[in-house]
Length: 185
Image (cartoon, rainbow, N blue to C red):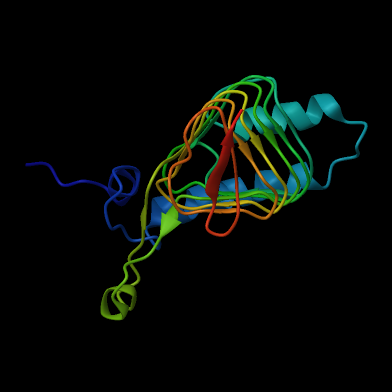
């Protein structure tokens, strides 16, 4: 049986070593691209799109306001017409799939990264990540936190300040901490 690399473990949702040389190099690459993106003149739309295409998995037409921060970038798959307002953070140690025509309010945070529950395991420095998926045409309000392993259904609306700890189905309005379905659309 062939041994998995730390990157392969990370993407498989298994415990991995974040200090791995390849992963450190990949994070530095993403941080440099985010730094450049966040400091661009607002009139440099073509340059912003070029940097986003270099950072993200696929070349898509999307609009992300500065400050945007992510761990790797290549684990983010954004659909066309994705919009993220200011101060979006996506910790993409696992896949983040964002459908077409999705809107994020300001300060949305998407976390795939997590740590072991037992302190003894955390002390070993290992991490893991669980994928996040956001369906097409969803609207995520400002200051929302989407935790690891969460799925948001197509056309769902998530109220500002919500903390998602469970999946949210398609076609509903949900809000709160923890986020709960309020009504169908």
